[in-house]
Image 1 (cartoon, rainbow, N blue to C red):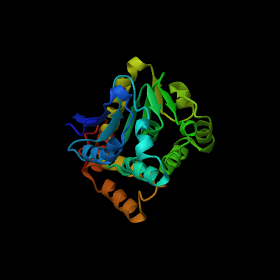
Image 2: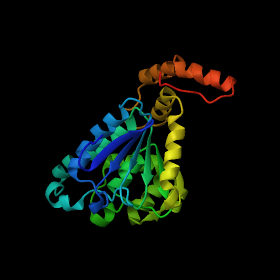
Image 3: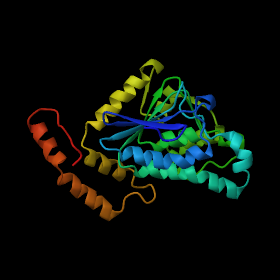
Image 4: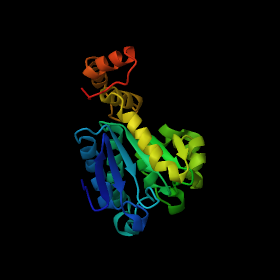
Length: 260
């Protein structure tokens, strides 16, 4: 399925893939892409059978930030900057409340807005030579506040300030040490490892995973009220998947979950 000229999606088994396909700009996001991203993510997650969404780039890069060539016209004063940042804010909120888990497959450049999207995902796998940075200070711009909140939630205050105050690049192995990514592998193994991780997540009970990720990320604004939390807990324990999980465990076999 095709989403936009630069945001392409497809479904393989239970995995929904969203590819940022703008290799000439190393995946840099223009405003149209930011504005389209929330709907593309939502539609992909809602596709029949999809149990996890994986975001990746093309031709050796993840996302090399926002398209700076647009800034002089579209982000030149505080009001225009607020308008421009609506897309990134909506993208983060969509990732936070997505109906399925999300995973970022990071290779090459993952800079600025690329980090915002990667950190917005639940989990991240990176190539050992991937390069992550948030060089807002080098550009004199204010990084989206919601992006800063998510950065601190993932990496903590000290690591966040290290990255923000220096604007330095960290490669995959250091990114793992800092808690920015969960796994690092050689570039040649990145896609295989990502597919294996996505498949292992997709094999679990969808209702239980949805509850777990929203409960863990409950501190993000507007994600999970107490009523919603109690409702989702009840859905899990009343589900056929719960019964199947118990039966499979007792029968020493692999469960077959159906998301109901």
